[in-house]
View 1 (cartoon, rainbow, N blue to C red):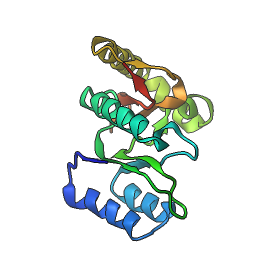
View 2: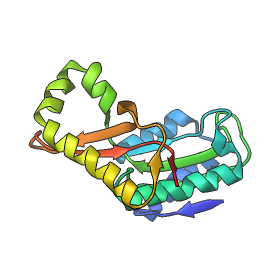
View 3: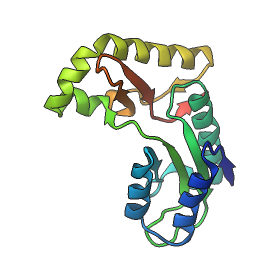
Length: 169
C-alpha cells in the first residue's frame, strides 16, 4: 500500500529509490536532512507492521497534517517485508521540525532562552493544535512535550508547533 502526497514528486520518488536500492537508514537520513525533511521508520514489533494498523495510522497522520497539527507529509508507505536494516511497517517522510519541546525545555540550555522568548506563541500554538483536533473529533493518546516538535521563526519570538503521535478517532 502506498499513498503519495508528493509536494516535490521527484524528491519523494528519489527517497523511494534509495530504499529500493538497498541503502541503509543513515544514507536516507542524510539525504532527508539535506532537504529539510524528516523520516519516521517503523520500530521493530510496532503496530504498523500489520497492514490494517498502518492504513489506520496513514489516514490519521494525513488528516492531522491537513489540519496543520502534524508536520506536512511528503510520502507514506507500508512495507510488508522486512529486508536487512529495514523493518516492515509504516514509513513516513515529512517536513522536519528540528526541536522537540521536552529537549528544548529540559536538556538544551541554549534552547531554553529561545523557548522563554517564544513562550506565548508556543502556548498559543499548542492550544490551537488541540482545538483543531477536538473540532475534528480526533484525540492524541500520548500527548507530552517529547511528542511536540517546533521550529522557531527568524526573529526568535515566534514558533511553529506540531504534534507527533498516533491520533485516534
